[in-house]
Length: 335
Image 1: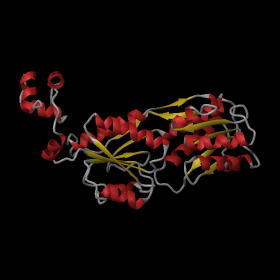
Image 2 (image 1 turned 90 degrees about the vertical axis):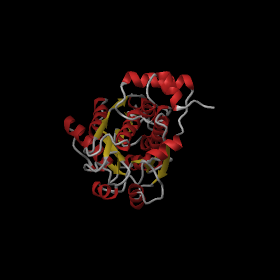
Image 3 (image 1 turned 90 degrees about the horizontal axis):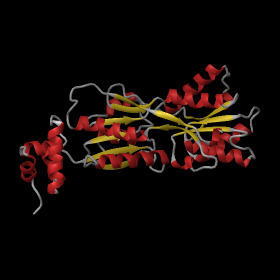
Image 4 (image 1 turned 135 degrees about the horizontal axis):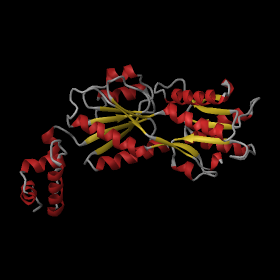
């Protein structure tokens, strides 16, 4: 027979109710008491019946993660970090791909997709803040990215303006006078590209470099082929750039390939900076300078916000916004 709650309680010298509170991660348990109970759990080998516990508490133990692209290296890495962190809470993550489609995002937010989850983490591309407010009800929601849901849901993001400004200023400091921006997406509602363009402009203004619309290239997607196409078009233009700030590492890797196909050396002839710090960029030749968001903090912060709502710790309180740190990882593509 396996150990029971009463066995843990007896060993720890506390009530069965206290053990239950520790197992369910309920607030209000003193740190010292929690340590005693956890030690007793380890010693007795107690394993909670998660299905029964969730049923009693009216929860499923499942959370949803809705991302635009499962195949994206950035979202894939983030999903892995979220799954690892969720396991520490005895949660299972159900992943869904929205492809940036408004109707799919709307169904997931409204809970009409048929999945019964205790909460949802979503990175929306198509819905506006007003749309999110109209759809999000029922299970708690945490929004990832730069679309501010105007107080209707908790929100986790990085400072994209500051990050883009730092990346562009780095190119200028390395000697660039004609840095391009690759990655504009005027049709998306999440404002990520617009904020990165703003940071790019601020760095140009600070350096006294005029804006050149010919050096600001929109893309149909954030993938390598679009980075290749954008860089090829820039190099065929009347005033080819001497550097490029790419709004994702995938775009930068495509741009790198286009430059090398034309016989350009990176960084000697062309400086490149990406965004996201994906593994491919760290092993490219040359290794890619990039803006590195703290993805571990994004995962941990999102789950903490969700847990606080699921367990009712913030009932009646306004939504919160968490700004996660980033750093500029300087590597070989900028010398």
